[in-house]
Image (cartoon, rainbow, N blue to C red; front, top):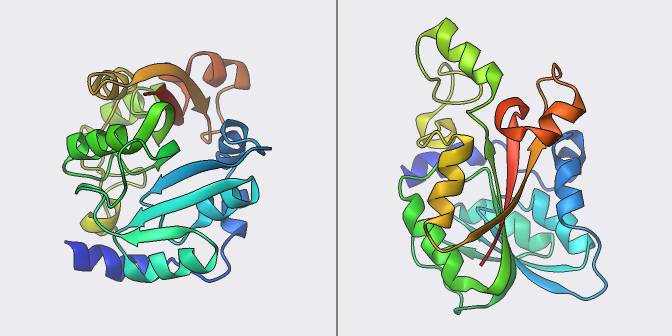
Length: 225
């Protein structure tokens, strides 16, 4: 499984890919969550890939560490300034207890077999009152509910089931709005807020920002330790 993930990722990692961050409208919300800092904070980017997000956070005065399963992607991220360790996000992290001010888990939790291991490690390495930000697809919204009815099944990924490698793209855990919050708070985190993000283009801003459970395509969940 690991070898397949690495093989697929190599096609997507580029030396100069920072433009990809700004090409995604959803990332404009991420910039609001991580503003420019006067005083540096230490942040862990879990499953950091080639450092597309991490490079932007470096520019905002975060001291960015990463953990990434693909050694090639980790090498690219290091060239951008991230301090990356190669490893499986589901296993014990090579970091001290209570080390990070911030942790970002971006579109990872739906792809792992052992989310319990991930969350327990995040709780361990995060400082008391530190912040965890989790982004994942919102399977509670009305668009997905209609798709379930039309297709007669739950799709394995946002793009459907065809033409995608299971190792890289399949969503192993399909989190809805409530189950994601319940799972993370059951592991001792405190839920602070949820930021709704829309890329379907069919709902007005008022709906997906104020009622993210029903109208957002992706949610940013913010927790404190």
